[in-house]
Length: 263
Image 1 (cartoon, one colour):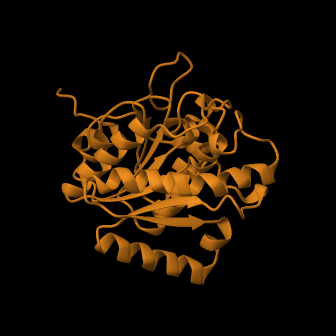
Image 2 (cartoon, rainbow, N blue to C red):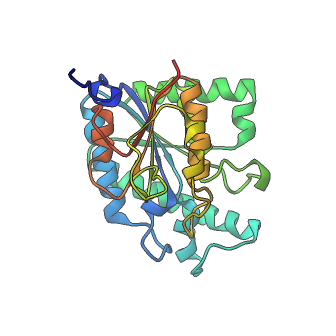
Image 3 (tube, one colour):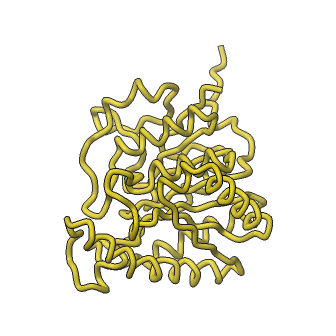
């Protein structure tokens, strides 16, 4: 009997895609500066998808990491106010970097800073969605980040993992891609799990450790995945350091770990 390929290989074109970039893939190894070469490549890949007719929205971490070097800090501060100061300095640098690299492809970027309260408000939610719809129609690339300068610690999204799932749900995305430093979700032997049908079945494989500059870890990503797939949005966790993972995922080809929706 002929064996059918996994559902993600049979997938049709994903029109609207939300891509989340974690801090670990946007900063240099020491974590005190933005990795310009890496961001340039990621911007080029997103731009190529837009030219193919996809609608791409970015959820980007990295503001705190971008501010560390400017403030002469070598490690992520423990004090909330100090992290907020890093974010305040770094957010402009982060957006400047995106503007520089997307402009190479004749694309304009837009900054959207949010907190949990913004999405929890009916009026705020509607206004954000309307703004994003207008930006997409004008082929502007919306770049979301948590507003770290005003966010309260207990309301943080967790390195933007949850935020990306909330954004994907809000805009009725066809696909959510979470890019991280790992190849995807790994089993107890360190091997990649290519496909997951039930998130609850694989939570035991989520390690609690995380990068120096990250707020979330794999546990945070699986929580985000659950939000997305429960809303009917297939989700992929893949490596952001490997070229063309975004392109492969958008084309329905194997990339990282694919999480199937319940719908």
